[in-house]
Length: 420
Image (tube, rainbow, N blue to C red):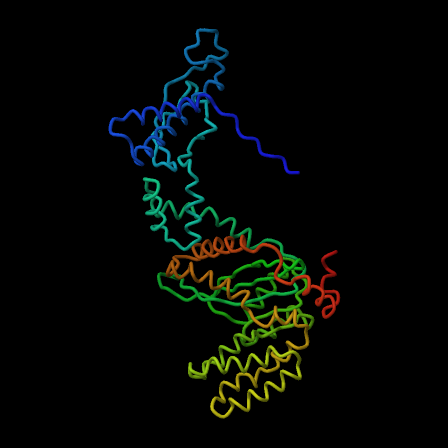
């Protein structure tokens, strides 16, 4: 049984302070409003902070203020110094107690600290949601009553850069039965000019059925040669076995997968991408009927049923829309590949929607920012957004128990590296 949390003991001095503030506010002849309450909270926080620091100084020196007894030290109180700090209730002007030897340091408010409301965490959180540095600055001023320059906001978010580097180079699992890869394009300033940059993104499902973003890579363009370098990198970070890799139809990508992971890794072309490519050759009025007919092919119960459905599909659409049908006749092997595997695995690998939903979330914040000023700014934004997404991924993917059983049958030994 979990131990019940004990309520903190009331502090008589703080209760007395609170009662005094309430009494002072209630004594106002004109009554009081929300603004008065807010100002009282500011005053209360100021008094509480100063009282606590005075108590700290008394403990540090070892004697009470104005004590006539023999002192245990020659060090003495030396008045106060003014210091402005940022709090949830606005800017506070505090009187910080001093000693003659300048040896006292408050634990409540250490030297050089001017923020007691975790503004950095809030600024980073707003940055992760796509707000600009100036927008964050304006929001903080509107809420807390003090301003931070856009430069200071940038310095605050720069604190995550070491975390980005550490995350990008972290060790990975040995086994990922499923990996999904894709790239999105974002605007970034390069030598004062805005350019489209290809952001390579990779998602893996590990042997426990849990999704993870294995990394993102900033490149000038998307190409199979760049993907091959990324495959080499994840192998150097510990990946030894990949059972299935799903991707779009980038030229040369299948050969790159084969060169790095061998024939044991099944490359699956995304069926949804093939549907989109074929729709380019159709009028919008035919989209629904075309998609319904082609779905009968790739969602058939067996390969024979899929081949029969594909014959009907060609007979219906080839005369009027041969280019749309050609997309499927030239790459039908990827639809056939699906039926080699059990339906539980087919449902996982037939589409890259797993990674496209992540790319969509990344686009939402990059589009809000416009052209990112530097690679560091882009890395910060993508990293923070990904960390927010990871918090929502709880537990294994749906039907993982059934998927794992089928992996044991169709991919014998897929999980044997886990025990090593």
